Length: 181
View (cartoon, rainbow, N blue to C red):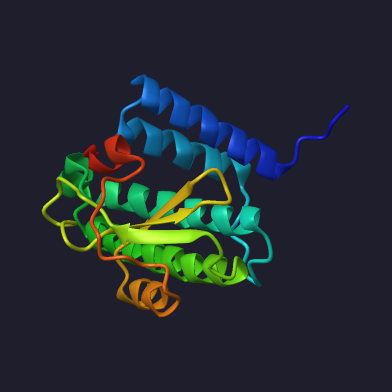
């Protein structure tokens, strides 16, 4: 009998949610809520020492990304705004914190991968807030794994490593990127 690791459970659940989203069975909001609930149940915190495997890097990226998106969603929740307006600032601070940690993880992961078979470029988006700011990072050796950021420090690092092109493209996961939540 093969023992299923925490990573196996995490990645299997993620693949299932992605499949459901692509089929239209989940909205982006539901995708985020389901992923947040799973991470919370899993009770696996991010790896803090170092990123020494692709799996650890992607887990940390996904952890921080989903925590940031969930906090952002909560900061805009009309019920919370109405009943607990004092909590809004806390959710905004959490959002910023988790996005910062996500960007730190991107750099650690890219350094671990030594920038091999990495491609980065700005993407076309419908969101005015993200237009001319967001870029996509594709890890070609890992089933075209896609990362996103708006961080200037991540962008500078990508340019320094000569893996960034200024040619704007559609995102590999365009439907997800452009759906509001």
